[in-house]
Image (cartoon, rainbow, N blue to C red; front, side, top):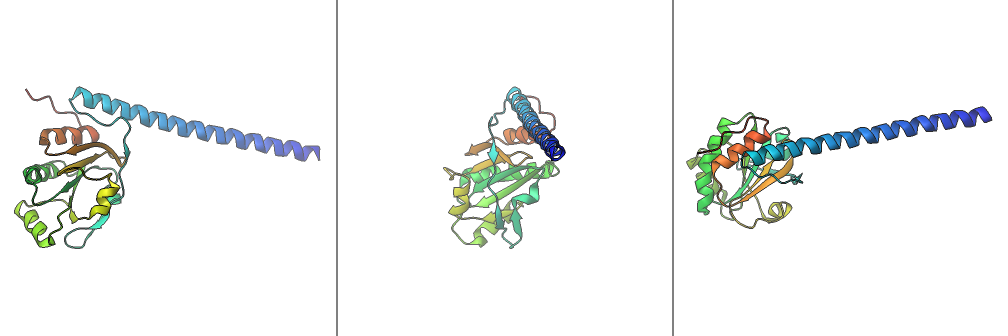
Length: 198
């Protein structure tokens, strides 16, 4: 009987030790991730770019593009993502669209742009707009439900920059220089920052 109690206590001790080590390892991994993110935030600041210090997970996207093809956030795992809410009637949206097309082409191995049109009009209007600018990334028409998932859209365009871990690290409301997007993409993709503009 005593040997069973001793054996049970020994097993309990081993399990407690294993659990403690696992918790320490998880805590260490979390601390490493936090330190890694802090380093990226610091590098970004040195390059004139601001990232949120406590990024939050991007809401799931599960919609269909203008042709009915699924557009899902899990398709872009491991890439930087720029989720852009826009409309055909929005002049700043139209101004940034050609820049997004160029950045998608230039960094296609590192970034995925996703356009979410909030137009209530017919999809033909959105399709004509997309064809006019030869958009080379997925475009879907969405309703207020997805806007709400992203915390509400206060103005157009609104773009959410997402890191390779699927966290929203920056939100831009209104037109933003393509140079800022490019710098953000490069930093989040692990590429060297561009030198500051003179």
